[in-house]
Image 1 (cartoon, rainbow, N blue to C red):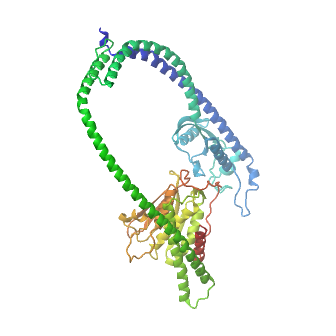
Image 2 (image 1 turned 60 degrees about the horizontal axis):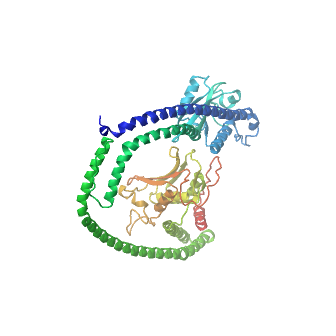
Image 3 (image 1 turned 180 degrees about the horizontal axis):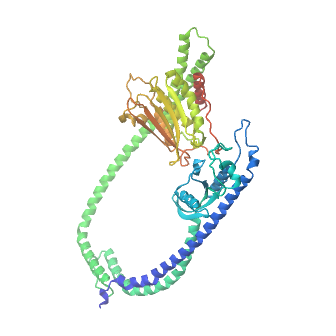
Amino acid sequence: MDAGKIKLKTKFGVLIVALFVVSLVASSLWTSYSQRQQTLNELREKGLVLSQQMTAVWDFMSANQDRFEASSFSETGSYQGLHCAIAGRSIAQLFTNESGYVTRFVNFDPRNIEDTPDDFEAAALDAFHADPSLTEYCAVTEYDGQQVFRYLAPMKIERTCLECHGEPKGEIDITGHPKEGWAIDDIGGAISIVIPMDLYVSAEQDSVLQNVVFFIVVLVACLLIVYLTLSHLVTKPLGKIRQGVSRIQTGDLDVRLDGAESSAEMNTLAAEFNDMAHELSDLYEGLEAQVDDRTAQLAHANEVLERQRVQLEEANELLRNDNEYKSNFLAMMSHELRTPLTSILAYAELLNREGNPVDEKEAEASREIEANGRVLLAMINDILEISRLDAGKTQLALETVDMGDVVGLVQSVVGPLARRNGVKFTCDINPDVPLIQGDFEKIRHVLENLCGNAMKFTPEGGSVHLAVERDAAAHEVVLKVIDTGIGIAEKDQQRIFEKFVQVDSSVSRKYNGTGLGLALAKEYAEMHGGSIAVQSKPGQGSTFTVRLPEDPTNVTGASSDLATTQFGEASAPEPTCDACEATGAEASREEER
């Protein structure tokens, strides 16, 4: 057979595959398998040790529970002590924070929602209940998007556990929870440990790499053989083609290559090279004309771009001048309007508190002066805050926020307004709402704006409800303001969040305001990494929903470090029922800012 007709890959492809791929892949697979078995054994032993340590902590707390209970009751008889479940969960959480491992105590009917098992943990609990002699349940699986080793060990009921979890079932124990009715050696749950496998996978890869290095040495020797073969079959023919390319680069388009005896591919490549050289010779004749034409078009385009650049610079200069004028105007307004207005409010408040009006008409006029002054001050503050937001001068002051405190302040301000307008105002905070990281004042401002807006558009006899919930799946706190007011048409529901926009923008509109309240609420929610939305129909009321992340760690512009979180029961302050005290407190907070 003519050697020039045999394909090149047929000559050396089989050699490369036979020498390298089979042996290298087989060795790598065997090494990976052996290393994986060793890794799983190490992880199982580590999970066993960690579960034994957590069991020891639990046993210690159970054995000494009587000592803790001796000083664990308040004067009213309520239990305030430290029991084994709290200690075990707290130590597990601390261990999780320090080590990167996840340690939990789970069972099917937990007293704490955080101890609810996931699918893997539920399967382990089923296995422990089905076979009480089973001492562990482990596997490599996915957890939060990464490969981990999961290990669960059963927690059996001991004598010391019966006081809180034994018979009779349903009786309230010292911690205020109903007993489960368990007996000694019952399965009371499981210790769940999640161990990241990053380090172990890295060790496996290092071992495989060492094996690959060994075969690379063999590979180099084999490549020498392949190189000698390719020198005859490829290098020499390609050298001729390279010389032909060099001649074309110098302008010699009449170069032609002869056929080679090495392979069919090289003969085909030489023939295609000759065709290319012939086509280049034909194209070169009209190339110079095309280059001249394209050069003229490019010059014209450059002229157009230069004119547009000059126009853009002129427009930018006008915008800079307008922005400077606006900043100067707002600075003047801040000093010239807020300062005398604050004085007017102070004297009006003093007059209402200590003055002696001639009749009720004079008293009402005095109260109207103070009320409308505060409305005007709020409008000015909203305008200034929007300006600071536009200028990028507003930042988040992140701290640990208890939504109960926020709702208490909002209730103390909005409550008197609701009573004055004859509107029923209620608040509801779900008990599982956690402490979050956020800007206390801005979150309060969002709720006050939404509640005040709902009050303004809800007729007498209607209702406004403020609800705070937790979306555990999204790790968000959901704030809802639900009213029975006039509602909003669907075509206006996106427009109301724009600055200086109201649905009724006519001169004779019924409801006053600057149209900045909802715009500020939207800006503050988005600064926290959250969102705001509305659902409404005309005549059927509206529902404004604000979603805030529990920990907005990626929010830009935060100006303070996160405060240290103190875990415990959150309680909202008692709302103030005096409308004057509420508005006075609001004025004080405005002045502090």
